[in-house]
Length: 230
Ligand SMILES: Nc1nc2c(ncn2[C@@H]2O[C@H](COP(=O)(O)OP(=O)(O)OP(=O)(O)O)[C@@H](O)[C@H]2O)c(=O)[nH]1
Ligand SMILES: [Mg+2]
Image 1: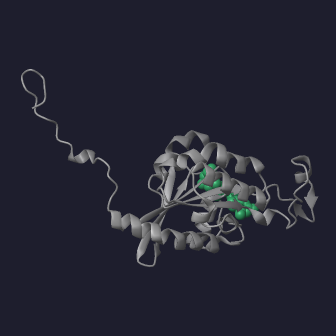
Image 2: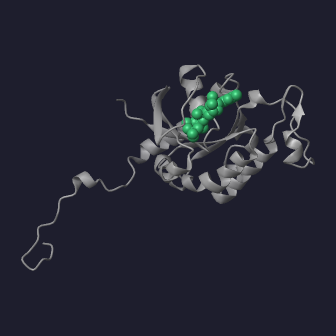
Image 3: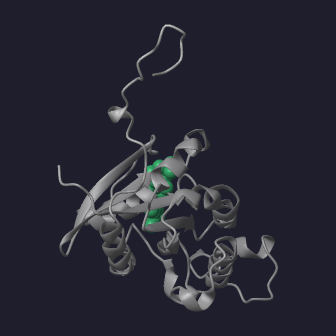
């Protein structure tokens, strides 16, 4: 198998459509999924680089694995369902801390999926939620999460990471709305992220492998009679 040069990780609550987005992008189709167990990855050739894209499980019981998947990640795609405000809240409360193990210059994208289920009439900013947000709008359901909510989360992430807005891509550029079902903006999402991770991959390669201890190199020290190590 080809060795990946860089890593992109999809995080988010169960059922938001992480696996479906990845299928849509890699296989160009939408098919029924089963809830992910642990994690899985695809390898994508992007120019001269191989990028691994990790699909993680949103289920609580696999939460502990999240920071392992994020280790050294060049980009994290935080995914929510535009029809569930809770799924956006969870990104901040449950998933953001998992990205502590990502690369220091990691790119963050926030993705609201399942826009095909909503009508195109977002709530006006002063409208109270949640009662009014479940009201229908045209033939479809009114979107429960507004683009501004995602942008606010992006800004909170910058604060959490102690990053200055002028040093990172603009919030409006990094908040996406997609539909894995219709394919709406799915290619655009992944390709925008890939473009942005290339400089990170170049830097990571120039710096060499991370300074971690390889336990396969470990040779136990000889013991002396007194029980101390020689
Ligand atoms: N209408 C619609 N349904 C979607 C979309 N994306 C995913 N779904 C459906 O939502 C459900 C969950 O999708 P998954 O892709 O399995 O969700 P997940 O985030 O991978 O969930 P976990 O693996 O449990 O973390 C499935 O029934 C999908 O068919 C979308 O864009 N539109
Ligand atoms: Mg899944």
